[in-house]
Amino acid sequence: MVLAFALGRAGEVSDALWRAQDAAALTRDLEGAVAAAGGGARVRACGRPFVGPYRGPLLAWHLDVPKAWVGFSPRAPGVVFRSRLGSGAPLAPRVPSGERFAAVAGHGRWEVLAACSGAG
Image 1 (cartoon, rainbow, N blue to C red):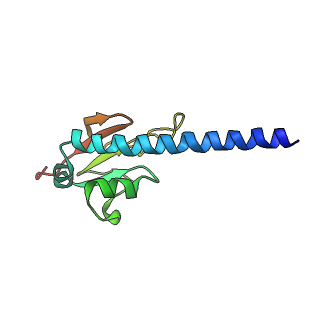
Image 2 (image 1 turned 180 degrees about the horizontal axis):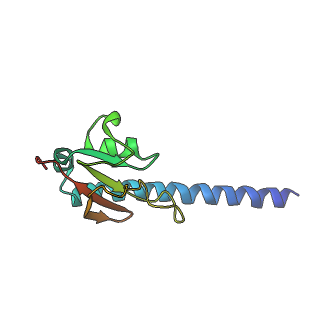
Image 3 (image 1 turned 180 degrees about the vertical axis):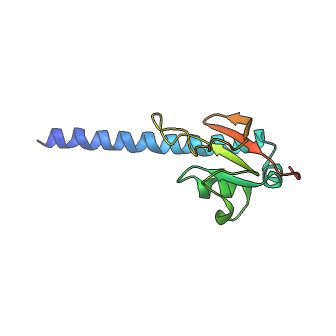
């Protein structure tokens, strides 16, 4: 019984470690994605940034913008940072059909799409 409990707990620790490593990679890769998109100033000049759920504070920090400025439902003008939260998860956020975002960069676990305003 003790062995079964210990094995169960070891599995939980292993899962938690994997999730922490995955989150660290997502964070590290976002820095590269912002750079590949031309840097924070260029992204901000293009329009509002958009990202999937649970990643808003991370993107706001990398772009040096208030968290409230980061959106979750992409629309032009703006820049969409898409990623998966896990290996089986879908890319998020989904870009609505009819919005004219074009792929501009990618790095690691991130893809970046943009539909810039006249200033971008």
